Length: 159
Image 1: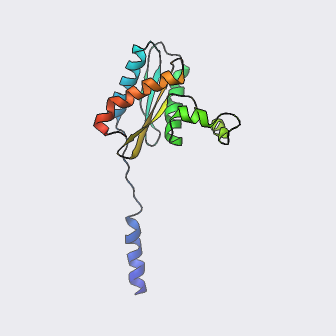
Image 2: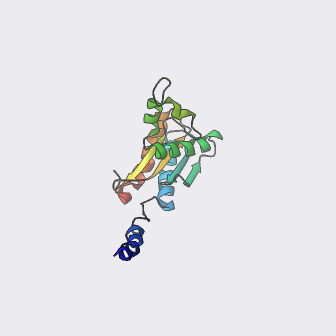
Image 3: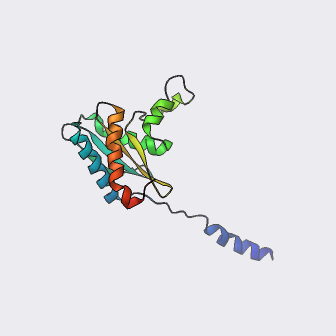
């Protein structure tokens, strides 16, 4: 009987060793980035847009030819921060102000706690994030990020 339990144990655990998660495709990321950049261009802002998958890897990166050189890394950082902390960066900016219990988060490598980074969720799962940098305010970056998310919303059944 002990031998049967030992032989059965690996089979029972094998089912729990693998997981699958939904994540954005490159096509979805590109579509979102294009829509966000188009919105910023329409509003007269020269920006960069980054879209990352659920693992934080850049899938799409677009930059208006006149956007400052800092906008690329900032957009990537905003998308990565929104994904990593599972909160939009406007909220992260507010909750990590000096004197707040979470203020130390700002000192972590790669964290960008400024508006313009937003999570992308579909069917209850975090599937990626978008970051926009270069508009005059974080709120304006948010408007462009929302336009990017809206562009893929119907296809992903976003929440």
